[in-house]
Amino acid sequence: MAALAQLGLSDASASRGARRARSFGLGLTVILGVASAFGSTGCQGAAGPVEELSGKQVYDRHCARCHGFDGRPTKASPGARDLTNRSYVDSLGDKKIRAAVMQGRPPMGPGQPMAMPAFGTQFSEPEYKVLIGYVRSLSNPELGPARLSASESEPGSEPKSEPGPKPE
Image (cartoon, rainbow, N blue to C red; front, side, top):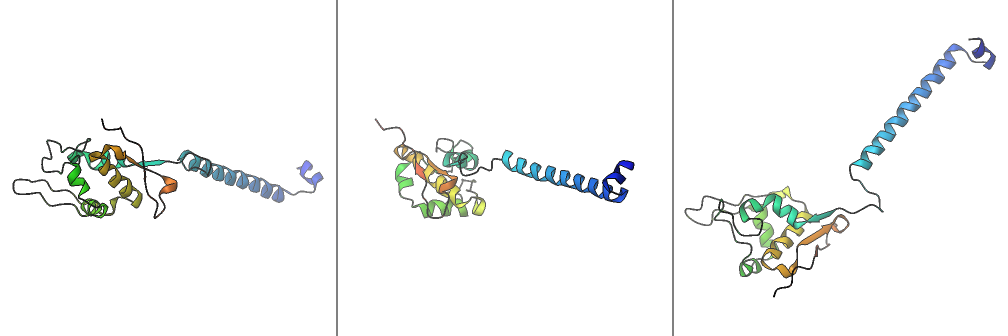
């Protein structure tokens, strides 16, 4: 206490100073913790890597169970459309493919218990773009699978196609 008196401080002002220091330390810890959390969740600055969205990823996660990983219907879903049939896929516009995915499809005929489920707004606009591109690539490998980077996911941008294998 004598030391406090020599500095011209009372017990109360020393206590306030200690509280301020603890508050500052706590605040700094919270700020650094939040900044660290954002850094570890993949948020990238302008110089960081750009995450790509692959049509194959979307297709494999939502469509392959019935249409098969290669675009041919699985045994469990014999009524699903064969997406490797180029004349069929080419006959569909992007809007028709999108409508089928959004609204679903009834069974193709009697004895076909399976119907295509409606995915509605489950997909974002970029996911629809790359999915449609990937569906087209299943029947036409020269198109290559569609990929979309996060920076291209702005309205009006088109997915890029990767070169596919050359037909022999």
